[in-house]
Length: 79
Image (cartoon, rainbow, N blue to C red; front, side, top):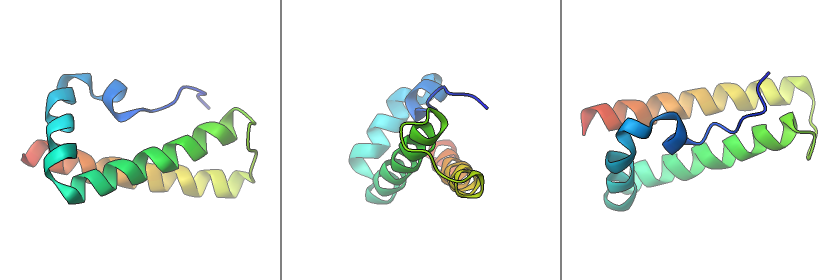
């Protein structure tokens, strides 16, 4: 388990300009981006025991985060 936050811009620095452009020009991407970061913050807060949750709940959030990141990745590559 990593306690490193998985911020999208940090994970995909080579796509930072495209991400920022999409965030401001594509409402669907912006919504997914915000949802990803909301879920990511929840996972990070659980991992660091700031807001502990059950292991099952954390696993579900990790799966949700991965699915959101996949959707974002597809949009980034298609733009």
